[in-house]
Each structure stands twice: as structure tokens, then as C-alpha cells.
Image 1 (tube, rainbow, N blue to C red):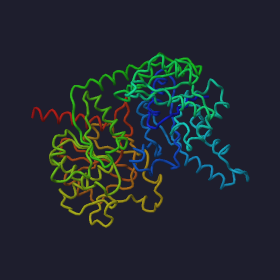
Image 2: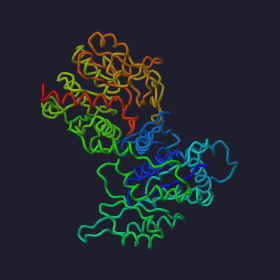
Image 3: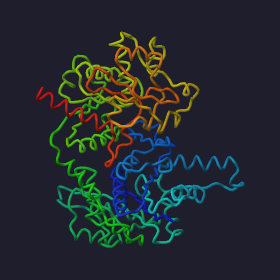
Image 4: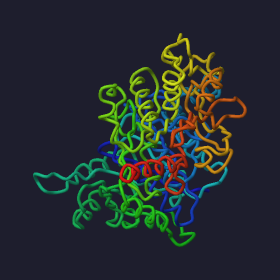
Length: 539
């Protein structure tokens, strides 16, 4: 039976519970344990698929087609494992399941209540990953903060599990804020004390308190937190702000958080701790030879989390290529013919990002045209690939009104059209083409150079596709389909034959990039940008 570690948060959101959970998991994985992480979110949406990126950041997609919280991306990037729909559960999904069972008569006329019916379903979901006994340790992150009304059923479910499971099989890590007041020039412990108090009032008591802080925590302050929060002094952990999230596992190692977990769970390390590869990655990340500038052309750039996986993929590929990737975020709505050279001319590469809807479309098309004509390395992802084909149709094939039927339903040249199996779908949530699908790659192409194989599986999230009625025209003019799905004939990858590096993909390569296995397309794209930057210095 798997051991369980629950991670809760207090005082404020966005403290980094997901990073702490992933860091603990990484350290335990490095000690030889088979570890996974799951996220329980308190919002009533069934999944994040219908949430605005400004509201919730990126929607992360798993191999099995689940639209999940962006924290699952952190889990995969740290652990190099694939998560699934079982790794992300929301209040909406819990209530939907219970209500469906009630409608089916499963409760035999009983009054359906939060306790025990909702909490029982939460506990069932918490234990679901352990049903096949595949894992040694399961880490569960609870979204929200201590005391939130929405989080109370989850808190109660964990309280019940503390009594139902052997005490050495379950532990609780509480992440809280230790604010520094510049006027008083001291760290304040009251928010932490109140956070733990609220948690205790709900029947939970942390085994470890992790304090997010901007300053080093003095020993006397650790003792104070220990006394007032009823934990041992060595169980008060400092989580000081780091330059990069990839430093956090090593910071937690220094604080001996992994040893505390093993001690509480009555486990002995399965092998000597080995973080050598991680330390080497950090060394390359912090000591790059040079810097390149890549433009990220998007429409949600005000919120960095909206493109989280893309940004992290650049971190991975940059470290591998021994170069620092400086991402210049450019709002596609701000681009026009008059300012294109001013905004794009100094860049070493252009990535046109995914998205939905009309806003900012023409700016993305303009960016694609600039990259094509100026021969700047280009990567288009999902909508970015679709805009690349529309730009090519307009300015190379002279189909001036070419567009996507998503934007202009009655366009005379529907280069991008609704997928056939999407035409009868009316519901929005969870109905796109989601998850990992096969793609056959042509040899002697940029894609083959990147992947070094003729068959790949990448993750998708879209309703619209390239219209194959125009494929012959495109290929005769030099835009080649170098990747297709053999079952549906869906064009997955397009490339320009007369350009140093110009590639668009219908899938999302960023979703599978990890520290240990950077996304192949990002590796090749960053390498091309690096070479382009050198060519500007030495033509």
C-alpha cells in the first residue's frame, strides 16, 4: 500500500505548493521510490478546459486527453513521468459524480450530504492512483488555502484519512507565508500561526511547516514557530525565494525535507541519493555561454502562466544548448505593418503561440510573414501553425481572402476548417481533439532531424485543422506537409523547403518537455536561433 503525503497552503494563494510538492517528489524519486503527484482543486468547474487563460493560466493536457491544472506540468517536468486524468480532480467533478450516482439510484433513497457522500467520493479519488499498487508514495496537493469554504470538504476528507490509515502511512506538509516587513526589518510569524490555527480548527495538524520567505529564517524564529505551531524545530523548513524553480529541490534537500518525510513515513532510502544530473542541468542553466532573444507572439502575454509550458521548454532547451533564452513577449494585437521591424527586427527567432478566437489574429499572421521573408527561425504551435498556412496562402499563393472558418465562417478559401468529427458537437467542455495522437514523419525533414524517428506521439488540443483540399497547391509552392496522422490524414507538421528553419505543428510539443528530456523541436529551434544569432555577428 502506498504512503500518502498531503500538501496544503495557508495565508495566500500562489505560494508555490505545486513546486514544493514536485520538489519533495523529485528528492524521493532520487532515493529510489516510485512517486506520483495529484492535484485536488476546489473550484466547481469540472476541469480547467473552459477557463480563460487570464483566470487560471495554461490548461495542461495529458496523454489520455484530460484538460488539467498547470501544476501537472510541473509534476511532469520535475519527475519525467506522464500524468493522467486521475491526477487532477476538481470539486465540480466530485459533485458531478455524486449527483449522477444519486440520479441512478445508487444511494437507495438516502439523503445525499457533504458528509459522508462527498467526502467519501473525495477519499475514493485520493486513493484511486493506488488501486494497482504501482506507487510507493503518492503526493496530493490541495488547492486553495486553509479556511476557504470551497476547500473544507477536501480538508475533512484528509482528516478522516488520518484516522483510517496507519499513522506511518500519512503525513501533512503545510506551506505558509513568512512576510518580511521592511519598516520593522523583521520577519513576522503571525500569518503562519493563524494559518496553522485555522488548519487545526478543521481537525488537521501539520507534521512539517514550510515557510515561504524572502529572508533567511533565524534559529530563534524557527523555535518560535515550533512552539506556537506545535511542531519540532527541525520540522520548520525555510523555502527562500530562488532564482529558478529548479533550485527548489536542492534547497529542500539542504533543509532535509526528504529525510523528514522518510522518518515520518517509516521508510528507508531504496538507494543512495543521486541528484547529479539535476545539478548538472542547473549548472548549465546558470552558466550559459551566450544569450539569444526569441519573440513569443501571443495574446495572453500579461499573464506568464498562460504560456508556462512554452517558457519552461525554452529553459530546458536553452540549458541543453548552453545558451540563455531571453523570451521577449509581444502582444499580437500590438503588431502592425509600421512597427513590425522595430519590434521583431532584433530577435533571433519567432514563436507564434497557441490560442483561440479572432483577437490578435492579424498580428500573428504579420509575425509569420516577417519570419518567412526575413528568413528568421520560426516555430508555430497549434494556432501558430494555422496562421503560418493562412499567411502562405495569402502572400505566396495569392489567395487574398484566405482564412480559418473559426474566424470567418464563409471565407472563400477555408485553409483551416472545422474537423469533420467536431461538426456535430455543441458542448464546449472536454470535446476538442485532446491527448496524444500518432504522427508519421517524412525523412529528410526538419521534423525528422529533431525527433530522429518516423513515428511520434504528441499531445493535441484543437477543433480546427488544415484543409487538405489546398495541400497540393501548398506543396507545389514550397510548403510541405512533413508530418501526418495516418488514420485521419490530418496534417500535423508543415515546413518551408526554401527557408533555414520554418516549421509549424498542430500539436503541442511543449507539453512533453522535461528537465531530463527536453522537447526535440524546442532543442532544434533554439539551436537554429543560436546559429542565426552567430550569423548576424559573423555573416
